[in-house]
Amino acid sequence: MSSGMFSAIKISASGLRGQRTKMDVVARNLANAETTRTADGTPYRRQRAIFKQVLGDKIRQHMASMGRNPADFMVRTQPGHMVPPSFTEAAAPGGVDSTTEVAPDSSEFRVVYDPGHPDADADGYVLMPNVNPITEMVDMITASRAYEANVSAVQAAKDMFNDALKI
Image 1: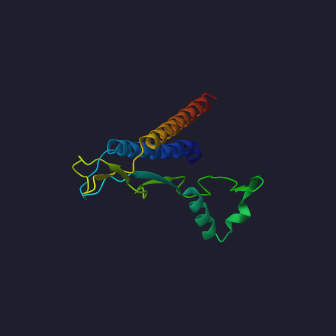
Image 2: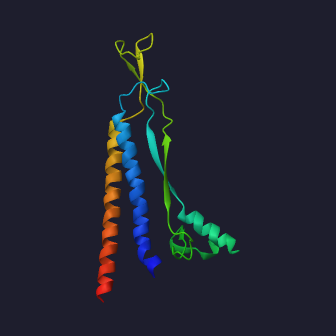
């Protein structure tokens, strides 16, 4: 029972870690939005937080190791939408987890005409970081709201555990 009881908190904790990483990345991007020269001599390159879900992979691997086809155990919830019947510890050994990786954004640097800038080329153009403060603020708000939702989920789980103990 304890693994099922704490799996909600474990899932939310994974989300909290991921969203905290995303907020850290956004803060780093905003802090370097005007950095035209880094240690390697190029402008700062925007970083992105990339979330990877591993629950589905674990379920498929576990079922394959048991000699079963995961598609045989899918449940239709809506037309065209199939999900596994349960996401329990038994179905996914090791529980639910997600990883957050930080990767550089491959978009082009902005080019700004500023002949007085110390990093300007012979024509007066400066390569600026590929950071858009508006995009970063939207990402920050999104991550903040998702973080708050995970905190609320943890609190709701704690409240349910307390209520269950009163029975």
